[in-house]
Image 1 (cartoon, rainbow, N blue to C red):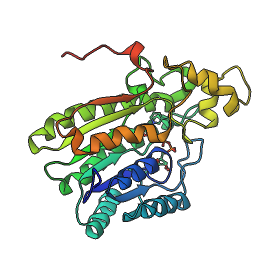
Image 2 (cartoon, rainbow, N blue to C red):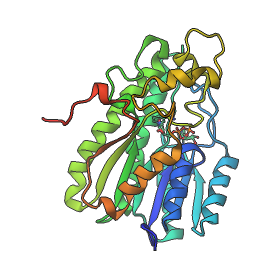
Image 3 (cartoon, rainbow, N blue to C red):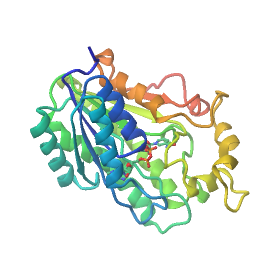
Image 4 (tube, rainbow, N blue to C red):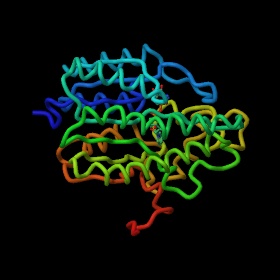
Length: 287
Ligand SMILES: NC(=O)c1ccc[n+]([C@@H]2O[C@H](COP(=O)([O-])OP(=O)(O)OC[C@H]3O[C@@H](n4cnc5c(N)ncnc54)[C@H](O)[C@@H]3O)[C@@H](O)[C@H]2O)c1
């Protein structure tokens, strides 16, 4: 018996990184998967995004778990593409129970202002588009999970001159995701549809291991390498064990929120951050 037997999950940004890890974690607990990704680059985002081969690999790995996987290429900035992917997935898999709005970019560095707009478009508007496209297929008991970031919870977040307009857009978007999750949870609670956020710290994916990110963490070096950044990443978290968490660590939180173990959990801003945001947050939020 899996925790998600008979359920279907829609995951954006599923070709690699955290999205792929979430697909495998949910499939291992019995869910069939609708997996989408842009499988193309975005001009202001200096590191490469996933490829169609990556998405195909996610499908192969889900099928290895003996679950079905419907893949399609879709850009979360385009509501029509998302609707089409979900409709195709639901037609093949029969239903939709879980939504993981995970796709994201982080266009750091000295860029034109449209890096700000691209980050907001993918990281915030993309989340809203994903939830809107999925909503007509959801029923009581459904679970929506959006990927935020500790950038949403920390003073300044990734909003500093060195991070450029894309960094400011990233923080704006992730703060927006946190607010959207809170307000959508309130709006959808009467329909017994839950909405929660996961907020990862530094996570071991291509987004973190990118030239732009390394330069932010080691501004003293011309061309910092992965090795050069370990201590700098580790110093951002009070728990001493790790410079970054693994995608699988985030997937454990996603699995909890997706499953009936969390049947009364909604509106949660769930940090998986080795304590990174603690210096910036209060014990509880009061109006
Ligand atoms: N890696 C980190 O340190 C970290 C920390 C906090 C939050 N996050 C968030 O985690 C999420 C997953 O990122 P990741 O760490 O796995 O990085 P990643 O770059 O490995 O994965 C992101 C995926 O999203 C896809 N994508 C990007 N733009 C898209 C679009 N417009 N439409 C559809 N797909 C698109 C990419 O192709 C890629 O497969 C993102 O929302 C990111 O902001 C990451």
